[in-house]
Length: 208
Ligand SMILES: Cc1cc2nc3c(=O)[nH]c(=O)nc-3n(C[C@H](O)[C@H](O)[C@H](O)COP(=O)(O)O)c2cc1C
Image 1: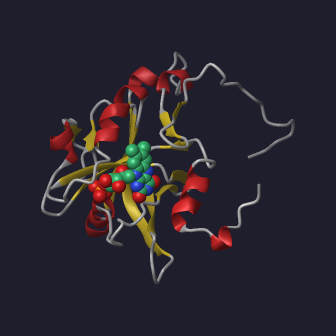
Image 2: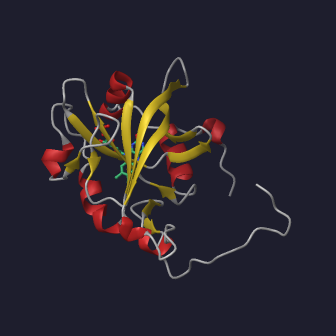
Image 3: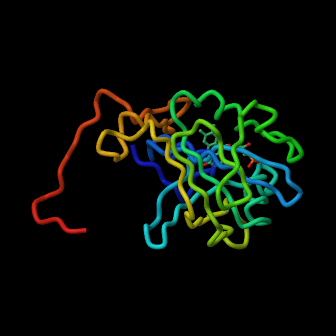
């Protein structure tokens, strides 16, 4: 089967890309507007960009009416956000916070998610997540520039909160204890804790 993307509706392009570019990690993004209102929503268009300066990327789509999602508006307004990673025990709560609540409603209060103060940024982090990255906005790019379908957001990581429970005896992250969820196609989710996981060493002579 060959799919010609030149003639494809965005809805179908989304379908084919989002169900094959998998698994995607989930950034559970907490923000705080200047008026103090908090917001929390998951985004799977999410990746690490570079360790120098330590930078991650999220790319929220626009709402169906073309407006910015609350997360994007808060990040543009305050220049700060927190990316919380989602362990399997939090997946139901994370899913509830994806509902399109009005901007006046905080998903923390509406969905019963406990907020914890961050160390550096004003946006709160989510209690109980294995890892939270406090970020300062480094770039916010509408894409495509003149008729944006998304906002590509680069955040510089200024602090990370790591739950000691996900560390092994060597004080390194134990991938099996981390137990994150990821997005796959349709309603499917993956888990980093899977019996089919395997290790693979780099080719001899590989240098970073
Ligand atoms: C697991 C998961 C991943 C999601 N990933 C994205 C995404 O990458 N981009 C996006 O625009 N919406 C994504 N959504 C939908 C948003 O979470 C949803 O639109 C949310 O209401 C946005 O909230 P906000 O307006 O408070 O920012 C995702 C939802 C779920 C459950």
